[in-house]
Image (cartoon, rainbow, N blue to C red; front, side):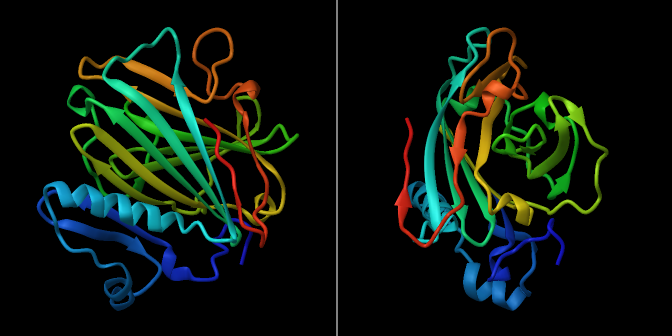
Length: 259
C-alpha cells in the first residue's frame, strides 16, 4: 500500500454521505459493501427539529474522539476588508486519528438564507471551488516549505493541490485519495465534515495547518476567513497563516482546545 492510500485499520469508515432533502442520507461512495453500509451507517429519514440533532450526532460520531486521537477547536476570523454581516462566526474542529485520517468539521453560524451555498452535486474532484462558498485546509510538516491544499465545497465537490513552496504548485496527480464529506445546510447553520487520508509520512511528524473559508453572500460578494490574516489582501497560502500546530496522536488521552 503506497503512502497516498488510506491507512485505516477499519476500512468500513471510508464512506461518503450526502444529505438529500426529503430522501434522507444516501451513500455516495464507500469501500465497504452495501450490506455492511446498511447495517452500520443507515440513518432514518427525518425532517424538522429532530433532524438537526440527528445530523450533529452523526457528525460527532464521525470524529470518533477516542484515546487514540487528538481534538483541537479553533475559530476563523473574517478579513477586515471583506466583511459579511450574514455570518456570525465559523469554528473548526480538527481531530487527528492515530490510524492516519484527519477529520475536519467546519461549523458556520449565521443567516444562511443570505448566503449562496453551492447546490448538491455528485461527489467529484473539481477546480476553482474557491470562487464560491467553500472550506479549505492547508497542511505541511513543521519546518517544511512543501504543503497540500484541500478544498471542500458544500456541493460535495473537492480538490487537492500540492506545492513545493509558497504558491509553487506541482502537477496534478490522478491517484489522490478521495476525501469523505458530510454536509448539513440549515437556515442558521452550515456544517461540513471532511475526512482525509494523509500520506504515511504526514502521520508520524508534527504538522502545521492553515484553515480557512471563502463565503459568498447573496449578492455574489466573497468574504475570506482564516485563523489569522497576514498584512495586505487575503492570502491563505502565506507562511504566517500556518498557525495551528498539531502533534501525532498517541495512546494517551489528550484534548486541546483553542479559542
